[in-house]
Image (cartoon, rainbow, N blue to C red; front, side):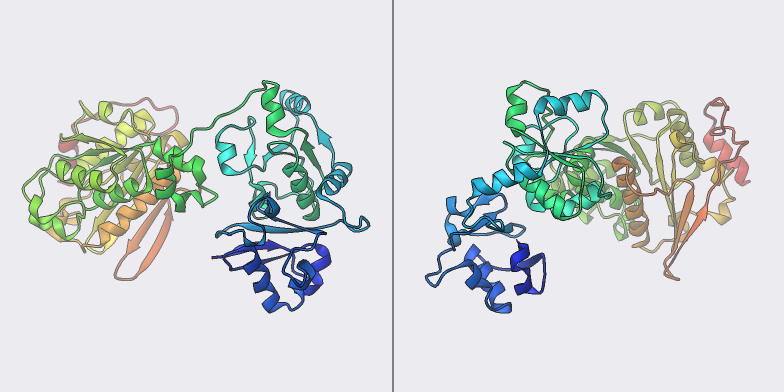
Amino acid sequence: MSVKVRIPTPLRPLVGNQADIAVAGATVMALIESIDGDHEGFKGRLCDDANNLRRFINLYLNDEDIRYMQGLDTPVQDGDTLSIIPAIAGGSGQSFPGILAELKKTHREISAQEVRGKQDGGDSFLLLDVRESEEFRQGHLPGAIHAPRGFLEMKIEAIAPARDTALTVYCAGGVRSLLACETLKNMGYTNLESMAGGFGDWKQKELPIETPKVLSDKARSRYSRHISIPEVGEKGQLKLLGSKVLLIGAGGLGCPSAYYLAAAGVGTLGIVDFDVVDESNLQRQILHTPERVGTPKISSALKTLKTFSPDIELIPFEERLTSANIESIIKDFDVVVDGTDNFPTRYLINDACVKLKKPCVHGSVYRFEGQVTVFDPAQEGPCYRCLYKEPPPAELAPSCAEAGVLGVLPGVVGLLQAVETLKILLGIGASLRGKLLTYDALEASFQTFKLRQNPECDYCAAGKEFPGYIDYEHFCLRQSA
């Protein structure tokens, strides 16, 4: 467990001029004694001989005065911040109201109406909400960025890298925002103002409020490791829960993709498959179990996923994809994951995704080798026909049943497909659009190759009208002959 203790300037010489120290301890006093163990004399500056806090020192756990909690016996938790607030120099024995008065002199204050006027006028500034998470979830100013005061130092540089960024800070009543402005000033920020009266005044004046959609406590606990990633956070997790992904194939590639997309909290998974579980599938198709041999893969996959992630919606399509049904199946999904094992279906999926402008995450495997890429017609990327204008002859592309496949290889490729899918849904990172990633398991090597759009492609080239679906079985047989 670690608690961050902020050291004020007068005490920094005692601790090697550190501005803050990470300390372990169960109570506020335990934190002080831990620091004193490494920096003798520290405790004596804060406490008298009877272990009472000196009257010119105030301690805040996060944003609460410990005098109104359990004093020095106040318990602390991992991630808490303890701030030491001494009387301001030159004001002997100054109380908190005195400190607040000094802060009001130091930092510009702005009314709720003025903040609203700046929003309506299109002024360029960042609105910073320094309240706690629960307060923010109950409602906040439109466009506000949440940075709880206890984590302000850790988050602000990602929010506002430039020290001259215009920052308007608010809290519940206008006190924590002034303290936050002081913290930001000490970090070098120069364009600061605090909203007087805080959220309470804004609400009383009936100005517009945003009440965000929030995760349940159960979801917040399950996806806590996602929420702690700045690129995902609660907003990103909510986006995943509202997303729809279609997996075509519940086999070697579809199984790991489905498993991890379900684990990640993608709210709706559609699965297309019309095959049954075979004993030979169990070497790599991890959604299926021995007692399900002979049963439909769809029902087997749904049973595993429902047990693993009971809150997500699963939509089964136990049918063969054809030109007649593919558009009705894929039209409502955000991303299509192609885990098929035959060329006619791959070309059909490609053509439908091009027509409906659906991103398609493609994966394929052969013995010890795999390929992954993203075809995204909405972003003017190349399509599968740009990569392979026609299918190879049968002797160069035998099926897994004919050529075999290392059992873990589809796991690697399927997981890469899941990663690309999550990046698309969250709008983060650089996708494999326009790139082909290849993996050689025997050589333990990855290579990335550029893919370019064929300007003459009949399906995805600019200005081309969709030529329609074809007899894909005949096309692949003819090209392979």
